[in-house]
Image 1 (cartoon, rainbow, N blue to C red):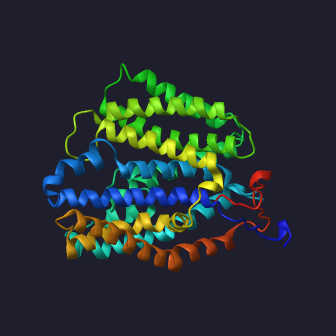
Image 2 (cartoon, rainbow, N blue to C red):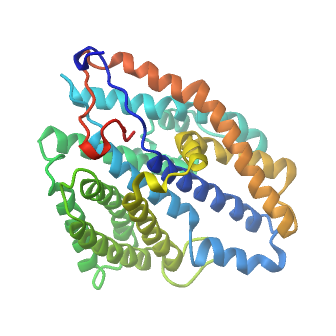
Image 3 (tube, rainbow, N blue to C red):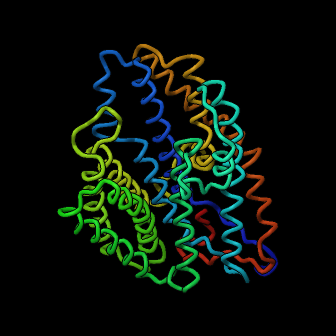
Length: 375
C-alpha cells in the first residue's frame, strides 16, 4: 500500500504496553487492599496494611502517574502527517477514549444502585457522558474518572503547541518541565494554601507528561541528551516532594493519603519509567504487555468488578483469603476488560480510522524504532 493511499501500520512498543500493565495492576492492587482495610477485615494487620498502601506508598497514585509518563511518551508524537493532522488526532483520541468510557458509564448505572445504593441525577449523568464534568464542578460517577480530565487537558495543550509549531521543537518540553518545577519549588517556602497546592498538583501531573516527552526525545532519535533528562528529573523530584508535603502533610490521617506515600508514588513512577525507557524492548514482558493493551478497559471496568465481588463474597479474614481476594479481583477484571476491549474498545478505534483524512500517513519514526509504532 502506498503511504498516500492509507494508514501505515506499525508494531506496538511492547515495553510501553508493559508499563501500562504495571500501572493498571498497581491501581487495582491499591483499590483491592483499601477494601480489605475499609471493610474492617485486616484485624491485627490493620497498621501493616495502612503503612503499605497509604502512609509510605500509594500504589494507586504510582500507577496513575506511570500512565501520565506513558502518555507524555506517546501522545505528542501521535499527530499524523496528513492534510488535517489536528482533526485526525482529535478523531483518533475520541474513538480511543469515549466509546469504552461510555460503556463504563452504562455499567456504573447498572451496578451502583443495586450494589452500592447510589442514585445519580440526570444532570450528573449527562455531564459525565461528555467527560467534562470536572470542568463544570460536577461529581464523577466514578472517582477514577478524574485522571481522564488530566488527559484531556494534556491533549488540548498538545494541540495548541502543535498548532503554533512548538510541539516538536526539542526544547519545548524541557522548558515546560523546568518552568513548572522551578515555580513550585520557589513557592514551597512561602505558599501554604491548600487550594493553590491542589492546582500545583494538577500541574505536577502535566509536568510528568512533558517529562515523558523529554525522555522519549532522548531515548529515541537522540534529539536530546540524557543529561537533559537528568536535570528535568531532578527538578521533577523536588517538585513532587514539595507538592506532596504541602498537599498531604506528614501526619497520617488513615485516609490512604500522606506526604510520604504520595511523594514516593510520584518519584517511584519516574524511576520505573526511566528504567524501562533505558531498557527499551529488553524490558518488555508478554504477560504485562497483554494487560497493557487492555489497560484502559481494565482501568474503567475493574472498580465495578471490585464492588460486585466485595458485596457478594467479601474480602476475607486471613492473609490467604486476602491474597485470593486480590488475585480474584485481578483475574476477573482482566477477563471482563478483555471482553470489553474486544467488543467495544478495539472495534471503535478501528471504526474511527474511517473518518481520518484520505491523505493520512503515519509519522515517520526514527531509524532505531522504524516499524515499531508507539501507540
